[in-house]
Image (cartoon, rainbow, N blue to C red; front, top):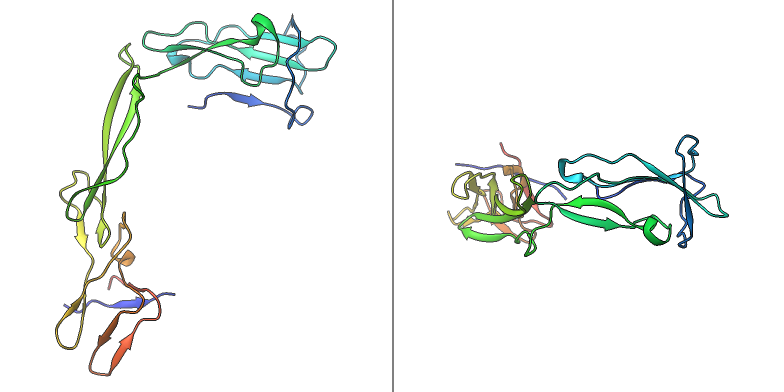
Length: 218
């Protein structure tokens, strides 16, 4: 079979800081709790992240004494089972007890991390994508597996056994084959190529690629 090649050279903290406060690294200061009725447009709004399906408490507003610094803070009312209570002061500069506000985070111990890509069989690679879930009321590490084609193959796989095809070869005049190659994760035959410097011969003459020669898929 003659194969044609073609030469071819959920967010942790949401912070709204309008221009008056942007770019500043505020120093901690004493703040008063104030009504939120007249909260200024240039104030900083802080939301507790997630709450694990729980609800946000009623907003509280703060104003720095002797300054124009304003904060509207939405903390979590409670953390559901399985979630860890996090007391944070990210971007919140008020001192003392006002400095911390409650958020919830699903944290697995030991840490739930993903593995790198590894070869599992000829033409196939896999990666374990661990993620921490608290949906059952307990922090639990859940593994999911992703697959991709190894270098020299193309396609996609859902089981690490099928779906990847070896890149076509280039046939020399004497009948020997130059294997095609590809980068890992190639999904199309057009990602397959003959490397720079590959020499081959046909009825016209001898050729040498001066750059990668990609398959046209035709």
